[in-house]
Image (cartoon, rainbow, N blue to C red; front, side, top):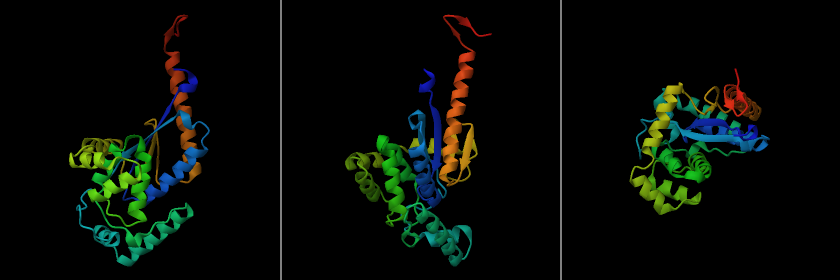
Length: 235
């Protein structure tokens, strides 16, 4: 491997039901677009569930779900929503909390693992469906339709969801998050060494990407220093 081929690894844990993950994805994408060495980065999205016990198919407004979960007044929840929506608007995202339906996101995460190279497009479609269009993202018919809109074969997706495909991959992501001590999302990890939590400004993500690449290059140089070649061994 040549020096220029060295790759930095970026991993991101997020949940479809997390508005800050939606905002963070937009800001991270902007950082990637501006990063000069984008081709030297490997970016992997991982599954996370903020509310894994949410009943599937309950179809309850998000405001009611949060009132029950957090034990705070509905008006306070609406104020929180208004703040998040205002921040999202500054990043070009039109979040409409009046239409958001609480959902169990396990199947949506399975869909992301089934999406292959279309994963980013499917993730974007899921965020938009949940936060903008008021879609029920724990309904499998809805997930098939969302997948088709992002360019996937709807019949293949339906078969995969019915066969429980991707479930082990989701569970592995959740276990890995627990092992790393992830307690909130979005959570960005560079080379399993440096982490950034939250929907940080674009400049913070740019700094993370630069640090990731520098650390990867340093590690490669260290490996070379401890290697032998045709000219002998480094002592």
